[in-house]
Amino acid sequence: MCISFISSKSEETKRLEQRRNRFTNESTATINRPIKSINEPNQPLIGTCEKLEKNYLRLTSAPDPSTIRPLAILEKSFSFVIDKYKSNNDWSYVNSQLKSIRQDLMVQTIRNDFTVLVYEENARIALEMNDREQFIQCQTQLEILYDSGCNNTHLQEFLMYRLLYLLLLNDYKKVNRILIGIDQVTKSDDLNITLEFCSAFRRKNYNQLFILYKHLPRLACCLVNLFIDIYRKQTIEILIWAFLPTFPIEIVTTMLVYESNEICQEHLHSLGVKFLDNTMLIDCKTSRTSFNKN
Image 1 (cartoon, rainbow, N blue to C red):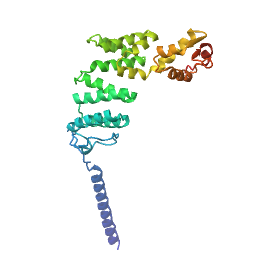
Image 2 (cartoon, helix red, strand yellow; image 1 turned 90 degrees about the vertical axis):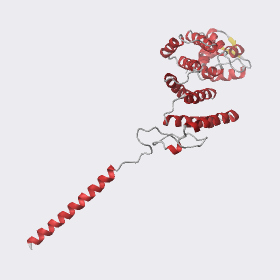
Image 3 (tube, one colour; image 1 turned 60 degrees about the horizontal axis):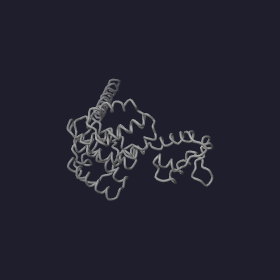
Image 4 (cartoon, rainbow, N blue to C red; image 1 turned 60 degrees about the vertical axis):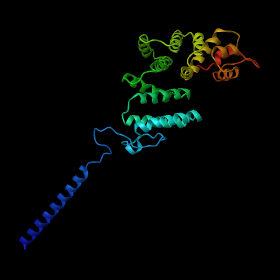
């Protein structure tokens, strides 16, 4: 009786042990089962998508080749998107499309002359549309691409934009580095005007600064426009403390390159500048106490 009980208990223990081992082996097999990768390791991703238009979506997982366009399709897509933008000037559309093209280039590690073309054109359109964030993203990548030996035909143009941007941010350390490099290149007329603008800016010669601003290349003007109201404000503060009792708005409009007296007056009002009743004369004394310095 006792022997039978011990034997039964021994058999039950064996069964439990076998069940435990089977469960452990199955769990380990499940845990260690390799995840299938879309691409073979160490192999460059090559897309297979053939869509010319594809909206930008932030990647949240490994890229799928079926959603990525290869270089040949990207070249066609770029031409198609730019032509469409020229006909409708839809920044929201072209911004999404160009970001998508840039993303497809990036995930396939394509860094060639076509990549430079995409970033250059994207940067120019971003300047036209006053999109500072997209311009900076493109400008940063262009520095890397130029340094890596890609086509730098337009290096001077983008060197000019980088110089102006850093100057207007008052980042003189980086400005000085660029100026040292510029000394070693043949300067175009556009670059020479930009250098004169930089010189006037550093000397705080705002009168000369705004004269030169009117002669900057078109896209360089677009870049300066991102910051211009900051320096208009500084100049206006100087004027209301330098003159009494009044100062004509027509001179401010011309000096600070506003499009009209009305636009100038609207901006001055937003800064707290006061005018004599029913006139276009700035009341300098009253404006000194109401001027918004923030």
